[in-house]
Amino acid sequence: MRGAAREGRVSTQPAHTGDSYADQVHITVRRFPAAPFVLAASVLAAVLMLVTPLPASAHDSLQSSSPAADSTVPTLPAELTLTFSAGLVDGKGATEVVVTDAAGNSVTDGPATVDGATVTQPLVSEADAGVYRVIWKVVSSDGHPTSEEFSFTVATSTLAEPTAATTADPAPSETPSAVQSPPATATPEGTPADGDAFLRVLPWIIGAVIVAGLGGAIVATMVRRARRRGTASDSDDASAR
Image: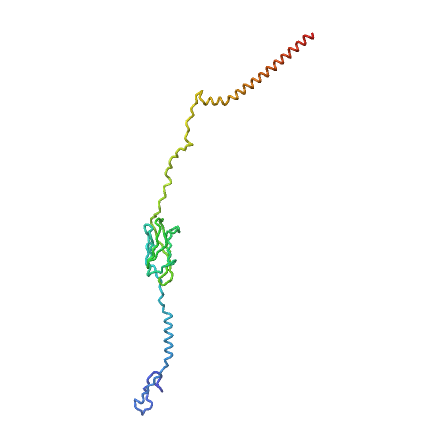
């Protein structure tokens, strides 16, 4: 090595040939300032903090349900239960569960209840077969709302069977108006019914007799007068002769 030793290295070249070996050995070590190293370490730590993913605050998740998601049950159960990973925040409007059938009709029967990490939703007693959709919303223990949905299938309907409309209607009973009245019996002659009828026409008969009598009297009077006139005419003619 030539001249003075390079920085950070040890030089064994003698400065003067007459000097001892210990005097000839020169150790030259240059001390670098510490500030650049501290700054570099700080920058590296900051970069590592930025690129390293921080653990996210996980919301309470649904662990299980009854009926289970994508399962098939014989009939619609009396209630739906949801079990979460931690206790939920309960309160007005915090928990909502909607269950609808294939036609979109709601089959819930009252509000859902929260007991720790379990949500229970009552269901109606009668429901049709088909695919049912569940939409739930809860408030996690960290105070953040979360919601999801799933579906399950009901194999058998529990709807009440309608009454048969093809049964023969009973024969209509005869109404009083349709009942034939018994034939009227002939009233024998001389009964009070005939007497009443005769009395009703008797004035007309008497009037007719009176009119006929008056007419006859008038006709007879006119005939007599005509005869008298004829006799008088004959007497006058005889006297004139």
